[in-house]
Length: 233
Ligand SMILES: Nc1ncnc2c1ncn2[C@@H]1O[C@H](COP(=O)(O)OP(=O)(O)O)[C@@H](O)[C@H]1O
Ligand SMILES: [Mg+2]
Image (cartoon, rainbow, N blue to C red; front, side, top):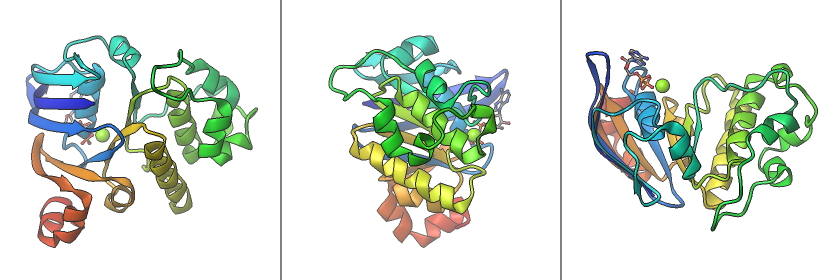
């Protein structure tokens, strides 16, 4: 579905991603783990085209998309929810969703308000509330819901649990598991290991722009030494 091979990315002369490879299969949740500054967001921005990789390949939905403009990659069905949620503060929940609407996509049941409100029940109770008057967790859910209105095949979620209260983190985890069940492939970037462990099938640990560990979440949970060495958990 989405495959990055030997990606190298730079900001100016700083060599940030130094040969990163991973693949996201249809119907799975893959998490990029790693501490602050490891390169997780840069990897996501490379996938969606906001950072142009200097070398490496990115295959998505049957196309070689490295170097494409972000809008073309998004149009192929790659959704992206950045760390900064970028909700329209003056628009209501329903209006924010409307802004994200894209045509239906072959093989994907189109997302509607009703389906999204089943996934995020909180949002359904505040349909007319302006985005600017929602909590951080509610805004994060709205940002994801708005991206789903584009009917993506796969979605990139950059630190969706960041700054959320524990009860909201649980709701976010339930929503991600439901997304997977709905057939949307999910790539997460996370520093919160326990959240990642509750939703991800596989994990890739990035350290200073290189892959330090990769495998199933079950294997990472069983490997105390790897967790301590790479994640301090
Ligand atoms: N726009 C930018 N310009 C220059 N350096 C950047 C920029 N964005 C990120 N970096 C640097 O790139 C490295 C990786 O950052 P990032 O991908 O955001 O890491 P993570 O998401 O894992 O915290 C860090 O050293 C960060 O300071
Ligand atoms: Mg980041």
